Image 1 (cartoon, rainbow, N blue to C red):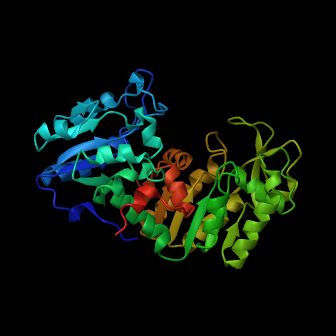
Image 2: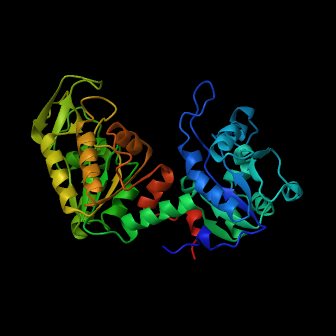
Length: 393
């Protein structure tokens, strides 16, 4: 995809409105527990400063539902951002074009939570026009907010020249390399609890991949559709026909589907529960499938060896509990090894996926890991992203 990039903009004497994502996690004491999203915004802010632009930052935090909620004010970001930049950051609760214009040209401004009005999530043009009036160019640097047509992340782009920030560029470039013009063969590993939450994803992927590995609880629905008794396992039996449709679509598209050929079962859903490995036709009525078995892992590793691109979304089992994290960790470590050898390009995303890869201690080894959550999933589903569409050249 061709999109307008920040490096092409003349910024001297201009004010840049930048959509960032400062929706960071905090503990009970209000301390930031993970500043990844702050760190990811720094390259763009520093670039703007170096090129002579005044910088106005927009972000949401939490879900205040359109009401002013002091507990969700973005003011807590200021000390962390100042420490990261080594520069003063001006916090403005109610911005105006006059107020912004009066600030020094090297000013860095953080505006109050954009979700303190319902006009933000409604994508109201009046709010978008007002935000646009604060500056000269719009920089979209929050891929995680790109799937919503909100005033500050998409609609504003209808009123200002719009460019991708450096973090956004990196995300879009890696995603394009994984699915739009990947090195082939291409495989995806899709796991998670339910088929119902990923129907669109699976239907899109089977037409674009060489191999699709399906794991986690959602694999049980496919096994059930093929006639296997999955015992007391999580299974969406009402989606049997949909699962068969997806399998047929994959066959028609010449996409190989890999499902478990052996499984790890237990009668209790808890950590370190007594478990056993068994064949698909040996699951007892009181047993739950909680992980893929070693023979399945071996097949998946063979697929990785034969692939040049891997897209990963979702765990292969109940990874939050030992020993049912085994298949996810083993596959993650093997993919990381292939990445270190430059044998595969591996892109991963989604909340549970990031947590699972962190458990396997491979976050630094994958080619790219997206923390965008919903936006990453909708990109994989082939859906339009409003915050990306405004950047297209």
